[in-house]
Image (cartoon, rainbow, N blue to C red; front, top):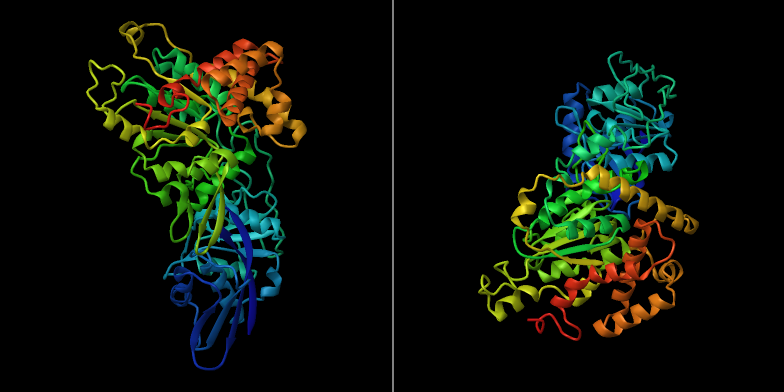
Length: 550
């Protein structure tokens, strides 16, 4: 007999529909899988045969052929186990596959017939919904995650016998609790013999991430800006960076609070919207980093990879071409501490993501595009020992400093909007009793500034912030008066700025003007934006290369 079942596969962060066809005939017994399959997908034949037998279902020796369509697209992972098993059961005559034309299946099977959760349930559920499926049957561990695709019925099963009871219309579970649009909602499930969903649909609060309050999201970091004493200049630079979505580099002696400020920057970022949270959660779903209890990430990511990270782990790759740290930081902060210690090839991978807000990973299996809309925050010392330019304490040679700084290229620094220098903290600042502003107070100002930018760019049909402006937007929204033009002409010629650096200064000045509720960019805004790039002059004096700077 013949059967055909729908499922979904993954290609990058996006999914695609797959039809699993099973044919059972008399002949030499065997189990054959056809199509472009990975090794773990092809090994499903051994798991499924044992899972069906250990579920108490008798299988007669037959020639079983399972085909995957479209055959040209590669299928990776173990999520095809359940649709293969369902197709085989239907081909055995235990259920009529035609009654499940709008039902999709995905999940991994154990040898005992149990169903195990798989990676990527969130993007696969959205793919099924967008392609006409009205119901998905998944492992119990993926139920809450898949239920985030609103408008589709989600049934979580523990084993193959429970799936079979749904297939033949005898399924009824009084103890089953459906997780609809919120995993906190508990409701009695309907009898599913009709195949029509009777799940109640609740509209959750969209003001914060689903299931997360603003306090919970802020508490996820367990840090606060009030803990940072001194460094008012760096804290101001951090607020400007977050307000406009600008990349930020800090330099200065060791122990001056650069890492402390970087770790607290997510706490002053605006709360995640639902659509943004879902996009970020898709990335974490593919990597298997979402909790079963909270299928949405719910807070801004903060990723701080070690400087010894490999290129594949940083940009993405591997046997299954998984997202890297660049994509895991999307929507939040990518913090690179001890920036010059990273391999130069690794740092140069940041060029495309910083400009395009996405990264394309090309491997033999194909090209995969992942989101990379993050704020880059870097921290570095001025020399290997961390005391330069204090020569009374720094004993690094010029050759050592050149080798240390040589990994930072001028093109990479030009893609960083703000380059600020940390100053040593005085004893009075460190032990002072006056508390700094809390993250909540700063975040309120940031949200007000972001609201101005949302209204500004709403006419473009997209949400954006000042740091994402292109040339046309800069020319339109960063127009200067005569005095401001003369000021920038002098700065441009005196510092030998490049065109990219000039536009970065204008973008930062636009953010500073927004923070002061000013419609026009003034000289004071430009002066502060220029000052926030003063560190670059010490690293790369006009006309000097990295090796010539010291």
